[in-house]
Image (cartoon, rainbow, N blue to C red; front, side, top):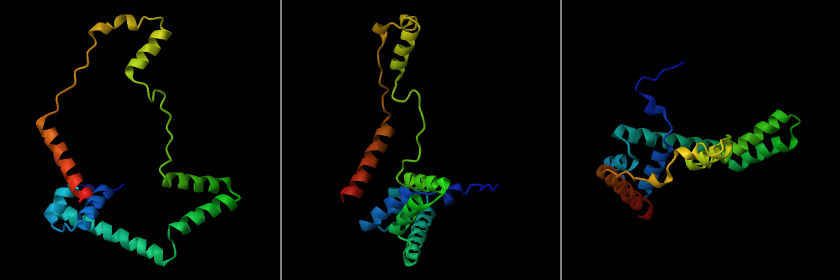
Length: 169
């Protein structure tokens, strides 16, 4: 096992920051300090590292293209495996790859998905013949919305402003 002491951020995938920097560059913003602010990066080195990752990814896509391996080639290859393979394992693996590529790879069962705590109490009450809801006095139930701190409001406004500048030009 390899432990990367203090360098975890160097190797993490930061596609969100890459997309923000790409959008900023397309708008003509080239100042490193501005790119740092826009992408939410702490240092200029992180900006340059992100640009390097983008360049490597671009080079990789060019190499795949030169080798004739574009998206059509990959999809056609997966389709051939699904249609012609004698092995169910290979067919299943190919189908899983396709599902994963479109984000449909995880179907985790959540028994209480879509139920809030109130629905669960009602359900328990019905099972226990009203004993659960007898303990709750509905007349005293009041929702108190917490106040949003000024720093959080300012941060949200700044994020909206930056997004508007990036995407509305």
